[in-house]
Structures are given as structure tokens and as C-alpha cells.
Length: 244
Image 1 (tube, rainbow, N blue to C red):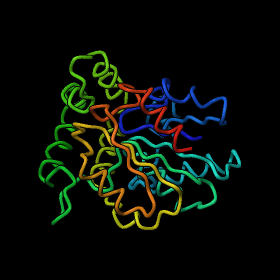
Image 2: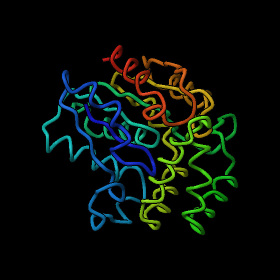
Image 3: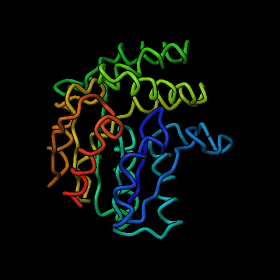
Image 4: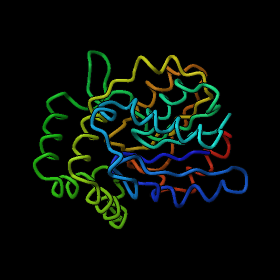
């Protein structure tokens, strides 16, 4: 079972979830290049100009470990990264668990991604101009759970630890990506976990993913915000356990 973290995070974000599966699975955790304790010198702007570069890394990890019929658990942008990896190496992952997925953040015609193009550009400009200020402003909104400020503080600190240049580039790749056309190609058994009051990936987005991945399961969690792996790990564990 491979756990992949979202933007601005690292593998530590799975510390409340991954141990619950160690008795049934070999659990694999890693940091995307540019995050956590990854080798920053491995960052290649040309490779990581799209999510495909990150998906290549997932496939490389899987091949190194000889993974077949594995379970991929991806949070936020890593949901799409794992989906792309499964398309590139169909035998590697038999199950996908997509936590707060979004194939496209920008509204497009009848598709409601949650943001206008100008809103995304303003957010990216804010990040480029003031990485620390962006982190302190965005993390509480993304995390939700205002009554538990320690959660927002952890996410803020995680954002702030990222290399600012890599953070800026990864944010642009994340928020400008469009993987809607890839959803219909997914053959792996798929579970979509949707939170309430998620400003990054709304109910409409989760339902769009569900309707476009054939045979997928959709589960609405009681958890609020965008990071249930931190705010409601028991609920995430229960949902994954019933799926696999």
C-alpha cells in the first residue's frame, strides 16, 4: 500500500493512517521531490513541468519494489499523480484511493472546478511574491477545523518548509493541471473520499470524478476541510479498510 502526500506536505502527514495497515500490507511512504526529506538536487524543472513527472517517480518506486496489484492512496494532487501512474503501469496498482481529488481546479464551461482562472493566477502570484504569507493565509482555510488550530499550524509549518522556488513551480503545475480526460481511462478499482466544506475539492468535483471513473465508489466523509488524514484519521482508516 503506497501512500502519497499532497501539495506542501510530506509523508509525515500519513502518520496516523499508514500504521493501521502495516499488519496487512507492506506500507510504502515517500516524499515527492522538493518536499520533506527528499533529495532537492534531484529536482528537474523540465521533468516536473507536469504531473506526469511526479507519476514517473511513483512508477519508478513501484518497479524498484516489484509492486503488483498494490493499493495506491493519494491525497489531493497525489490522487491525480497516482491515477496517471496507474495508467502508465496498469499491473502495478489494482486499487486507487483518491482523497480529495480534483482533475481540474479551474472552472470551464459547465465544469465547476471551484476557481476562476483569475483567482488561480492571483493565488499563484501571491505565493510567488510572499511564500511565508501565502502559507500562513492559505493553510487554515485549506485545513478547516477552525476549532482545532493546531492542525492549521502543522499545515502552515509544512508549507513553510518547502523550498520557495519548488513550491511556486509545483503549485502552478498542480493548480493549472487538467486531467479530466484521463478519468475515463482508469481501470483500477477506485474509491473517492470526499470531505465536507473542502474549499480545494468541493462535493461537485468529487462527484465529477466518481461519474467519470467507471465502477468507482464515492464515500462522503463526516470530516471537514481538505486533510482528513490529519483531522479524521480513524474515519479514513475505516473507509479504506472496507474498500480493500
